[in-house]
Length: 419
Length: 179
Image (cartoon, rainbow over all chains, first blue to last red; front, side):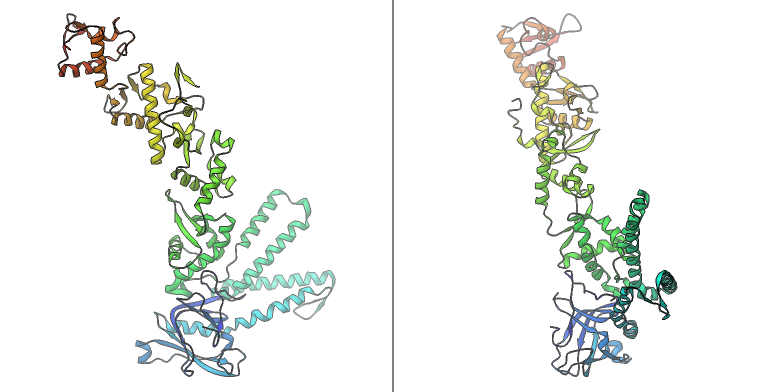
């Protein structure tokens, strides 16, 4: 659908947009049309979800997952201020943009002509707030910054002997290295100060913060190995902790109540589905909801979600086509599992474990099962209880604890018990 | 084969889950069935008529595997026997249970058979004699519980097969058979 007029935008498996490096979401609206009044054969983009980011205006088709289009903010020449008239107060709100396009009408930053397109806000929306966000995003020109920076800083680091300081002074040898380090720390310090003064500025600094965290992590990594075997256990332990903590700072663009408004739970739900993929793999296909709550909030950093938000986000998954689902066990424990997860597979594995000679004599405990299956003990216990309810296992409760044995009751013939 | 005294225990007596009350319905039904059989068999061979839940009952624990039935489990299995008419609670608090490994009706038939075999038509015998006299040796009546015996006799009395009356000594009763 997009092909001819607008650029195509990529989506993840759960229908969330794939953002470019450094791209941060700013605003989300539902039921938005994109129309072009001057071109009669411009295909109507009707009733989609509009996501404004620092780099682009994204439009996602609500019904068709593969229909997603993008207007790079770099292609926007002018944003018309919305007219305040009786028509706009009671009718639909429109925001008009003048964008560069090629001769045959395709929107392109380097296009030779220009056309005017309009964003029609059909749903409940705050036109003024969207308009101001659009202007902010457009004027800060973040897409230019991220495309040019990496190249420049890399070439600085890679040069072999001489370093170009920011003041232009040529530095060589140890003093050069020291001075460079000093400069870096000063700029980091300044950066931190700026970030903490203004929360809005913090949001745009978010990318820098993540890069900083990455650098610190690498430093820690190189630091611990360069000192050889001299590090004692405790130091290594806290180093590991630090690394893990920094690793979990992953999401640069958290979906917030402010930027998505009424769509909050929908977008959160999609983001959660994307996020949970990797922890699920690591945990063996099933992970407790409480663990997801901790991991997800840790990754978000700020704008934490409440347990209710999490539950609601999971509940919405039923409406989308995502590969994960929420499941509640009889015991009340809630987990997130892959839709492809097979109970039968787990049952077969449990059966083989419990038929081993050691288990036939002494049964298995939830921790034995956890080790054998490679999953958390809480999950293992749930699986054992499920196997019991299917008649595969039976329980043995004693002062020694809670254990499970293969169910032999079914094989005992009541008429012949004294063989 | 493991034994409890001279009683041969079934092989599953060493299966630890046997001593834990199973929550899953199908498994539980099987477990209850096995315990019912075992309790009746044991009581029959050992001539046990009463089980007290707060006392040690050798059948309810297995020292080899270090497992015993919980109070809840004991009550569950005995209640199952009560529902089937093979046992009766002797008190409201379910602390003592009368085990009818022969039903009262079966006991009554036993007594009639005993009376016929020993030619007791129109004769009188004390209740004590029925359960501990020379004639009763070798029969099931020997050493039977007095309460159960009285109930069986009362049942026969209703059918007109015996007549119970106070004997010469105040602490025993007499039975006259009219078969």
